[in-house]
Amino acid sequence: MAPNVELEAWRVSGISRTYPSYRRVFPVSEESWLEGKHNDDEAEGLWRIKDKLYDLSDFAQRHPGGAFWIERTKGTDITEPFESHHIEEHAARMLSKFEVRKASKPRNYNFTLKENGFYMVLKKRVREKLRSLEHRTTRKTDVLHSGILVSVFLLSWAATVLDSLVLRAFAGLALCWLANSSHNYFHQRDNWRMYCFNLLLMNFSCWRISHALSHHVYPNSLHDLEMSSFEPFLCWVPSRHYASKRHRVISVLISPVVFALLSLGQITQRLIYSVVKCNVMYWHDLLGLVLPAFLYLSTNAGLGSVIVNWAIIVCMASFIFGFIGLTAAHHDPRIYHDGDAPRTDRDWGLFQLDTIIDRGDIKWSDLLVLTHFGEHALHHMFPTLDHGVLKHLYPELQQTLSEFKSELREINHWGHIKGQNQQLLRTRANPIPPGSKKFK
Image (cartoon, rainbow, N blue to C red):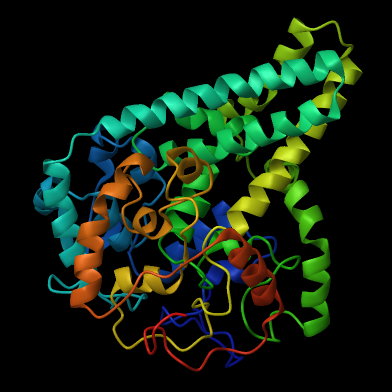
Protein backbone atom coordinates (compact mmCIF):
# COMPACT_ATOMS: atom_id res chain seq x y z
CA MET A 1 0.00 0.00 0.00
CA ALA A 2 1.28 3.49 -0.81
CA PRO A 3 2.71 5.67 1.99
CA ASN A 4 0.16 7.69 3.92
CA VAL A 5 0.98 11.10 2.41
CA GLU A 6 -1.52 13.93 2.72
CA LEU A 7 -2.21 16.61 0.13
CA GLU A 8 -5.03 18.42 1.94
CA ALA A 9 -4.14 20.14 5.20
CA TRP A 10 -7.59 19.45 6.68
CA ARG A 11 -7.16 15.68 6.42
CA VAL A 12 -5.52 15.29 9.82
CA SER A 13 -6.43 13.59 13.07
CA GLY A 14 -5.72 15.16 16.41
CA ILE A 15 -4.80 11.82 17.98
CA SER A 16 -2.34 10.45 15.42
CA ARG A 17 0.55 11.34 13.11
CA THR A 18 -1.28 10.14 10.00
CA TYR A 19 -4.69 10.35 8.44
CA PRO A 20 -6.36 6.91 8.82
CA SER A 21 -5.87 4.86 5.64
CA TYR A 22 -9.23 3.11 5.89
CA ARG A 23 -11.07 6.38 5.24
CA ARG A 24 -9.62 6.44 1.73
CA VAL A 25 -11.82 3.47 0.82
CA PHE A 26 -15.60 3.60 0.36
CA PRO A 27 -17.61 2.10 1.85
CA VAL A 28 -15.70 1.66 5.09
CA SER A 29 -15.95 -1.69 6.83
CA GLU A 30 -14.39 -3.74 9.61
CA GLU A 31 -12.06 -5.31 7.05
CA SER A 32 -10.95 -1.98 5.57
CA TRP A 33 -10.43 -0.58 9.08
CA LEU A 34 -8.15 -3.47 10.04
CA GLU A 35 -6.30 -3.24 6.72
CA GLY A 36 -5.79 0.48 7.32
CA LYS A 37 -4.36 -0.19 10.77
CA HIS A 38 -1.95 -2.72 9.29
CA ASN A 39 -0.64 0.14 7.17
CA ASP A 40 -0.72 2.89 9.81
CA ASP A 41 0.26 1.25 13.09
CA GLU A 42 3.95 0.44 12.50
CA ALA A 43 3.44 -3.02 14.03
CA GLU A 44 5.54 -4.80 11.38
CA GLY A 45 3.13 -7.72 11.05
CA LEU A 46 3.19 -8.45 14.79
CA TRP A 47 1.33 -7.14 17.83
CA ARG A 48 2.51 -3.76 19.06
CA ILE A 49 2.20 -2.62 22.69
CA LYS A 50 3.78 0.78 23.29
CA ASP A 51 7.22 0.66 21.66
CA LYS A 52 7.72 -3.10 21.64
CA LEU A 53 6.63 -5.84 19.24
CA TYR A 54 5.29 -9.21 20.36
CA ASP A 55 4.45 -12.48 18.62
CA LEU A 56 1.23 -13.81 20.16
CA SER A 57 0.50 -16.38 17.43
CA ASP A 58 1.02 -19.44 19.63
CA PHE A 59 -0.91 -17.89 22.52
CA ALA A 60 -4.11 -17.07 20.63
CA GLN A 61 -5.87 -20.40 21.28
CA ARG A 62 -4.91 -20.26 24.96
CA HIS A 63 -6.07 -16.67 25.47
CA PRO A 64 -8.62 -16.67 28.33
CA GLY A 65 -10.76 -14.06 26.55
CA GLY A 66 -10.93 -16.11 23.35
CA ALA A 67 -8.74 -16.38 20.25
CA PHE A 68 -10.76 -13.73 18.36
CA TRP A 69 -9.17 -10.77 20.16
CA ILE A 70 -5.65 -11.87 19.27
CA GLU A 71 -6.18 -13.32 15.81
CA ARG A 72 -8.03 -10.26 14.50
CA THR A 73 -5.52 -7.72 15.87
CA LYS A 74 -2.35 -9.19 14.35
CA GLY A 75 -0.34 -6.46 12.64
CA THR A 76 -1.86 -3.64 14.71
CA ASP A 77 -1.08 -1.48 17.73
CA ILE A 78 -3.06 -2.88 20.67
CA THR A 79 -1.60 -0.69 23.44
CA GLU A 80 -4.84 0.86 24.72
CA PRO A 81 -7.01 -2.28 24.32
CA PHE A 82 -4.36 -4.29 26.17
CA GLU A 83 -4.31 -1.87 29.11
CA SER A 84 -8.09 -1.42 29.34
CA HIS A 85 -8.96 -5.10 28.90
CA HIS A 86 -6.48 -6.36 31.52
CA ILE A 87 -7.09 -4.70 34.86
CA GLU A 88 -5.05 -7.26 36.79
CA GLU A 89 -1.30 -7.45 36.19
CA HIS A 90 -1.07 -11.12 35.11
CA ALA A 91 -1.11 -10.32 31.38
CA ALA A 92 1.57 -7.65 31.71
CA ARG A 93 3.85 -10.08 33.56
CA MET A 94 3.50 -12.61 30.72
CA LEU A 95 4.40 -10.22 27.93
CA SER A 96 8.15 -10.70 28.16
CA LYS A 97 7.72 -14.32 27.02
CA PHE A 98 6.43 -13.13 23.66
CA GLU A 99 8.65 -10.10 23.09
CA VAL A 100 10.39 -10.05 19.70
CA ARG A 101 12.11 -6.66 19.48
CA LYS A 102 11.63 -2.95 19.83
CA ALA A 103 9.58 -1.23 17.14
CA SER A 104 11.64 0.54 14.50
CA LYS A 105 9.32 3.56 14.31
CA PRO A 106 7.41 5.65 16.89
CA ARG A 107 3.74 5.01 17.62
CA ASN A 108 1.20 6.53 15.28
CA TYR A 109 -1.07 7.54 18.18
CA ASN A 110 -0.12 10.31 20.60
CA PHE A 111 -1.89 8.96 23.69
CA THR A 112 0.08 8.50 26.90
CA LEU A 113 -0.31 5.84 29.59
CA LYS A 114 2.17 6.99 32.22
CA GLU A 115 2.26 5.18 35.55
CA ASN A 116 1.60 8.48 37.36
CA GLY A 117 -0.97 9.63 34.79
CA PHE A 118 -4.74 9.76 35.24
CA TYR A 119 -5.67 6.43 33.66
CA MET A 120 -3.00 4.24 35.24
CA VAL A 121 -3.59 5.75 38.69
CA LEU A 122 -7.34 5.12 38.32
CA LYS A 123 -6.72 1.60 37.01
CA LYS A 124 -4.60 0.74 40.07
CA ARG A 125 -7.38 1.94 42.39
CA VAL A 126 -10.01 0.01 40.44
CA ARG A 127 -7.87 -3.12 40.61
CA GLU A 128 -7.63 -2.84 44.39
CA LYS A 129 -11.36 -2.15 44.68
CA LEU A 130 -12.32 -5.19 42.61
CA ARG A 131 -10.33 -7.49 44.88
CA SER A 132 -12.59 -6.57 47.78
CA LEU A 133 -15.84 -6.37 45.81
CA GLU A 134 -18.37 -9.18 45.72
CA HIS A 135 -19.46 -9.70 42.13
CA ARG A 136 -23.09 -10.49 42.93
CA THR A 137 -24.08 -7.67 40.61
CA THR A 138 -22.92 -9.79 37.68
CA ARG A 139 -25.56 -12.41 38.51
CA LYS A 140 -28.21 -9.69 38.61
CA THR A 141 -27.16 -8.59 35.13
CA ASP A 142 -27.49 -12.19 33.93
CA VAL A 143 -31.03 -12.36 35.34
CA LEU A 144 -32.01 -9.10 33.63
CA HIS A 145 -30.56 -10.27 30.32
CA SER A 146 -32.37 -13.62 30.54
CA GLY A 147 -35.66 -11.87 31.28
CA ILE A 148 -35.26 -9.57 28.28
CA LEU A 149 -34.44 -12.55 26.04
CA VAL A 150 -37.61 -14.37 27.09
CA SER A 151 -39.69 -11.20 26.63
CA VAL A 152 -38.49 -10.84 23.01
CA PHE A 153 -39.99 -14.21 22.08
CA LEU A 154 -43.18 -13.82 24.14
CA LEU A 155 -43.97 -10.33 22.85
CA SER A 156 -43.12 -11.26 19.25
CA TRP A 157 -45.35 -14.34 19.49
CA ALA A 158 -48.23 -12.30 20.95
CA ALA A 159 -47.80 -9.58 18.32
CA THR A 160 -48.01 -12.18 15.53
CA VAL A 161 -50.98 -14.08 16.95
CA LEU A 162 -52.98 -10.95 17.78
CA ASP A 163 -51.75 -8.94 14.78
CA SER A 164 -51.15 -5.99 17.09
CA LEU A 165 -49.02 -2.99 16.13
CA VAL A 166 -48.72 -1.99 19.78
CA LEU A 167 -47.33 -5.40 20.70
CA ARG A 168 -44.95 -5.21 17.74
CA ALA A 169 -43.64 -1.93 19.16
CA PHE A 170 -43.09 -3.54 22.56
CA ALA A 171 -41.43 -6.53 20.90
CA GLY A 172 -39.17 -4.11 19.01
CA LEU A 173 -38.28 -2.37 22.27
CA ALA A 174 -37.49 -5.74 23.87
CA LEU A 175 -35.32 -6.76 20.90
CA CYS A 176 -33.44 -3.45 21.11
CA TRP A 177 -32.91 -3.93 24.85
CA LEU A 178 -31.66 -7.45 24.16
CA ALA A 179 -29.04 -6.15 21.73
CA ASN A 180 -28.05 -3.35 24.11
CA SER A 181 -27.70 -5.67 27.07
CA SER A 182 -25.83 -8.26 24.96
CA HIS A 183 -23.31 -5.49 24.26
CA ASN A 184 -22.29 -5.93 27.90
CA TYR A 185 -21.20 -9.49 27.09
CA PHE A 186 -19.40 -9.22 23.76
CA HIS A 187 -16.80 -7.01 25.46
CA GLN A 188 -16.00 -9.94 27.75
CA ARG A 189 -14.49 -13.37 27.23
CA ASP A 190 -16.45 -15.63 24.89
CA ASN A 191 -19.86 -16.57 26.32
CA TRP A 192 -23.26 -17.67 25.03
CA ARG A 193 -25.02 -14.39 25.84
CA MET A 194 -23.02 -12.41 23.29
CA TYR A 195 -24.70 -14.44 20.52
CA CYS A 196 -28.05 -12.87 21.43
CA PHE A 197 -26.83 -9.64 19.83
CA ASN A 198 -27.21 -11.33 16.44
CA LEU A 199 -31.00 -11.57 16.78
CA LEU A 200 -31.10 -7.95 15.58
CA LEU A 201 -29.38 -9.02 12.32
CA MET A 202 -26.12 -7.41 13.41
CA ASN A 203 -23.08 -9.47 14.34
CA PHE A 204 -21.20 -9.33 17.62
CA SER A 205 -17.90 -10.30 15.94
CA CYS A 206 -18.13 -7.29 13.63
CA TRP A 207 -19.07 -5.08 16.56
CA ARG A 208 -16.08 -6.33 18.53
CA ILE A 209 -14.04 -4.62 15.81
CA SER A 210 -16.10 -1.52 15.02
CA HIS A 211 -17.19 -0.89 18.60
CA ALA A 212 -14.80 -2.52 21.09
CA LEU A 213 -11.52 -2.12 19.19
CA SER A 214 -12.28 1.07 17.24
CA HIS A 215 -14.91 3.22 18.92
CA HIS A 216 -13.90 2.40 22.48
CA VAL A 217 -10.24 3.16 21.83
CA TYR A 218 -10.54 6.17 19.50
CA PRO A 219 -14.00 7.68 20.20
CA ASN A 220 -15.14 10.68 18.14
CA SER A 221 -11.94 10.66 16.09
CA LEU A 222 -11.37 9.91 12.42
CA HIS A 223 -10.10 6.51 13.60
CA ASP A 224 -13.55 5.73 15.08
CA LEU A 225 -15.04 3.28 12.57
CA GLU A 226 -18.41 3.31 14.31
CA MET A 227 -18.72 7.05 13.72
CA SER A 228 -17.25 6.96 10.22
CA SER A 229 -19.59 4.18 9.08
CA PHE A 230 -22.58 6.56 9.18
CA GLU A 231 -21.04 8.89 6.62
CA PRO A 232 -22.19 10.34 4.27
CA PHE A 233 -25.67 10.09 5.81
CA LEU A 234 -24.70 11.38 9.25
CA CYS A 235 -21.50 13.29 9.98
CA TRP A 236 -20.41 14.53 13.40
CA VAL A 237 -16.94 15.79 12.42
CA PRO A 238 -17.12 19.61 12.80
CA SER A 239 -15.79 20.70 9.42
CA ARG A 240 -17.38 21.81 6.14
CA HIS A 241 -14.83 19.66 4.34
CA TYR A 242 -16.64 16.54 5.57
CA ALA A 243 -20.22 17.80 5.21
CA SER A 244 -21.71 21.13 4.15
CA LYS A 245 -24.32 23.00 6.17
CA ARG A 246 -27.07 21.90 3.77
CA HIS A 247 -25.85 18.31 3.97
CA ARG A 248 -26.02 18.48 7.76
CA VAL A 249 -29.58 19.83 7.79
CA ILE A 250 -30.62 16.90 5.59
CA SER A 251 -28.82 14.56 8.01
CA VAL A 252 -30.96 15.76 10.91
CA LEU A 253 -34.12 15.21 8.86
CA ILE A 254 -33.24 11.71 7.63
CA SER A 255 -31.67 10.42 10.86
CA PRO A 256 -34.85 8.54 11.95
CA VAL A 257 -34.79 6.62 8.65
CA VAL A 258 -31.10 5.83 9.11
CA PHE A 259 -31.83 4.49 12.59
CA ALA A 260 -34.69 2.28 11.35
CA LEU A 261 -32.62 0.76 8.53
CA LEU A 262 -29.42 0.38 10.55
CA SER A 263 -29.53 -3.39 11.17
CA LEU A 264 -30.86 -4.27 7.70
CA GLY A 265 -28.23 -2.00 6.15
CA GLN A 266 -25.39 -3.65 8.02
CA ILE A 267 -26.23 -7.21 7.07
CA THR A 268 -26.97 -6.15 3.46
CA GLN A 269 -23.57 -4.47 3.19
CA ARG A 270 -21.82 -7.56 4.58
CA LEU A 271 -23.69 -9.87 2.18
CA ILE A 272 -22.72 -7.72 -0.81
CA TYR A 273 -19.11 -7.54 0.38
CA SER A 274 -19.05 -11.35 0.73
CA VAL A 275 -20.27 -11.83 -2.83
CA VAL A 276 -18.15 -9.13 -4.47
CA LYS A 277 -14.87 -9.37 -2.55
CA CYS A 278 -14.43 -11.99 0.17
CA ASN A 279 -16.59 -13.77 2.70
CA VAL A 280 -17.17 -11.86 5.94
CA MET A 281 -20.19 -13.84 7.10
CA TYR A 282 -20.13 -16.11 10.17
CA TRP A 283 -22.13 -19.22 10.98
CA HIS A 284 -23.78 -17.33 13.82
CA ASP A 285 -25.29 -14.84 11.38
CA LEU A 286 -27.94 -17.54 10.97
CA LEU A 287 -29.07 -16.81 14.54
CA GLY A 288 -30.82 -13.75 13.15
CA LEU A 289 -33.34 -16.15 11.61
CA VAL A 290 -34.18 -17.89 14.89
CA LEU A 291 -36.94 -15.41 15.77
CA PRO A 292 -38.89 -15.65 12.47
CA ALA A 293 -38.44 -19.44 12.51
CA PHE A 294 -39.89 -19.54 16.01
CA LEU A 295 -42.86 -17.40 14.97
CA TYR A 296 -43.55 -19.55 11.93
CA LEU A 297 -43.42 -22.83 13.86
CA SER A 298 -45.34 -21.65 16.94
CA THR A 299 -48.22 -19.77 15.29
CA ASN A 300 -50.75 -20.43 12.55
CA ALA A 301 -49.62 -17.37 10.61
CA GLY A 302 -48.48 -17.86 7.02
CA LEU A 303 -44.87 -17.42 5.97
CA GLY A 304 -45.53 -14.04 4.35
CA SER A 305 -47.32 -12.74 7.42
CA VAL A 306 -44.52 -13.92 9.68
CA ILE A 307 -41.86 -12.23 7.55
CA VAL A 308 -43.75 -8.93 7.48
CA ASN A 309 -44.37 -9.06 11.22
CA TRP A 310 -40.72 -9.88 11.92
CA ALA A 311 -39.47 -7.14 9.58
CA ILE A 312 -41.60 -4.54 11.38
CA ILE A 313 -40.26 -5.70 14.77
CA VAL A 314 -36.66 -5.57 13.51
CA CYS A 315 -37.08 -2.08 12.03
CA MET A 316 -38.66 -0.80 15.24
CA ALA A 317 -35.85 -2.37 17.26
CA SER A 318 -33.25 -0.91 14.91
CA PHE A 319 -34.77 2.58 15.22
CA ILE A 320 -34.75 2.45 19.02
CA PHE A 321 -31.24 0.96 19.02
CA GLY A 322 -29.91 3.78 16.85
CA PHE A 323 -31.81 6.44 18.76
CA ILE A 324 -30.56 5.26 22.17
CA GLY A 325 -27.02 4.53 20.98
CA LEU A 326 -26.39 7.83 19.21
CA THR A 327 -27.88 9.91 22.02
CA ALA A 328 -26.16 7.98 24.81
CA ALA A 329 -23.03 9.97 25.57
CA HIS A 330 -20.81 11.07 22.67
CA HIS A 331 -22.34 13.75 20.46
CA ASP A 332 -22.75 17.30 21.72
CA PRO A 333 -21.00 20.55 20.75
CA ARG A 334 -19.36 20.56 24.18
CA ILE A 335 -17.79 17.13 23.58
CA TYR A 336 -14.44 16.72 21.84
CA HIS A 337 -14.59 15.59 18.20
CA ASP A 338 -11.64 15.31 15.86
CA GLY A 339 -10.76 18.79 14.64
CA ASP A 340 -11.43 20.42 18.01
CA ALA A 341 -8.50 21.68 20.06
CA PRO A 342 -7.20 18.79 22.23
CA ARG A 343 -6.08 19.14 25.82
CA THR A 344 -2.34 19.36 26.47
CA ASP A 345 -2.28 16.23 28.64
CA ARG A 346 -2.70 13.37 26.16
CA ASP A 347 -3.52 10.77 28.81
CA TRP A 348 -5.81 8.17 27.24
CA GLY A 349 -8.23 8.14 30.19
CA LEU A 350 -8.65 11.91 30.08
CA PHE A 351 -9.30 11.64 26.35
CA GLN A 352 -12.16 9.23 27.09
CA LEU A 353 -13.68 11.76 29.50
CA ASP A 354 -13.30 14.52 26.90
CA THR A 355 -15.41 12.50 24.42
CA ILE A 356 -18.21 11.65 26.85
CA ILE A 357 -20.99 13.35 28.77
CA ASP A 358 -22.63 10.69 30.92
CA ARG A 359 -26.35 10.26 31.44
CA GLY A 360 -27.14 11.20 35.01
CA ASP A 361 -30.85 10.40 34.77
CA ILE A 362 -30.59 6.58 34.62
CA LYS A 363 -28.06 5.78 37.32
CA TRP A 364 -30.85 4.81 39.73
CA SER A 365 -31.84 1.76 37.67
CA ASP A 366 -29.63 -1.25 36.87
CA LEU A 367 -32.03 -2.15 34.05
CA LEU A 368 -31.78 1.27 32.38
CA VAL A 369 -28.00 1.37 32.82
CA LEU A 370 -27.75 -2.03 31.11
CA THR A 371 -30.12 -1.20 28.25
CA HIS A 372 -29.19 2.46 27.67
CA PHE A 373 -25.37 2.30 27.74
CA GLY A 374 -25.18 3.84 31.19
CA GLU A 375 -22.08 4.44 33.35
CA HIS A 376 -20.56 5.31 29.98
CA ALA A 377 -17.25 6.86 31.04
CA LEU A 378 -16.32 3.98 33.34
CA HIS A 379 -17.48 1.48 30.72
CA HIS A 380 -15.19 3.05 28.12
CA MET A 381 -12.20 2.89 30.42
CA PHE A 382 -12.92 -0.62 31.76
CA PRO A 383 -15.00 -2.31 29.04
CA THR A 384 -14.63 -5.90 30.23
CA LEU A 385 -16.29 -5.18 33.58
CA ASP A 386 -19.95 -6.06 33.94
CA HIS A 387 -22.21 -3.00 33.87
CA GLY A 388 -23.51 -3.93 37.30
CA VAL A 389 -20.02 -3.56 38.78
CA LEU A 390 -19.28 -0.10 37.41
CA LYS A 391 -21.51 1.79 39.85
CA HIS A 392 -19.26 0.67 42.71
CA LEU A 393 -16.21 2.39 41.20
CA TYR A 394 -17.35 6.01 41.50
CA PRO A 395 -15.45 6.73 44.75
CA GLU A 396 -12.20 5.75 43.00
CA LEU A 397 -13.13 7.76 39.92
CA GLN A 398 -14.06 10.88 41.88
CA GLN A 399 -10.86 10.70 43.95
CA THR A 400 -8.75 10.48 40.82
CA LEU A 401 -10.71 13.22 39.06
CA SER A 402 -10.12 15.51 42.03
CA GLU A 403 -6.38 14.84 42.05
CA PHE A 404 -6.07 15.57 38.33
CA LYS A 405 -8.42 18.57 38.48
CA SER A 406 -10.84 17.04 35.99
CA GLU A 407 -14.55 16.24 36.08
CA LEU A 408 -17.22 13.76 34.99
CA ARG A 409 -19.88 15.62 33.02
CA GLU A 410 -23.54 14.55 33.18
CA ILE A 411 -26.82 15.60 31.56
CA ASN A 412 -30.20 13.93 31.03
CA HIS A 413 -31.40 12.18 27.88
CA TRP A 414 -33.25 15.20 26.54
CA GLY A 415 -30.02 17.15 26.74
CA HIS A 416 -28.29 14.43 24.71
CA ILE A 417 -31.05 14.40 22.09
CA LYS A 418 -30.66 18.15 21.57
CA GLY A 419 -26.88 17.94 21.69
CA GLN A 420 -26.68 15.16 19.10
CA ASN A 421 -28.64 17.21 16.58
CA GLN A 422 -26.64 20.33 17.37
CA GLN A 423 -23.44 18.36 16.77
CA LEU A 424 -24.72 17.11 13.42
CA LEU A 425 -25.18 20.77 12.44
CA ARG A 426 -21.81 21.98 13.80
CA THR A 427 -19.25 23.00 11.15
CA ARG A 428 -16.73 24.92 13.24
CA ALA A 429 -14.08 23.34 15.43
CA ASN A 430 -13.95 24.26 19.10
CA PRO A 431 -10.75 26.28 19.73
CA ILE A 432 -10.95 25.82 23.52
CA PRO A 433 -9.29 22.58 24.74
CA PRO A 434 -11.32 20.26 27.01
CA GLY A 435 -10.77 20.87 30.70
CA SER A 436 -10.16 24.59 30.23
CA LYS A 437 -13.32 25.48 32.11
CA LYS A 438 -15.87 23.74 34.29
CA PHE A 439 -18.85 22.10 32.62
CA LYS A 440 -22.23 23.84 33.00
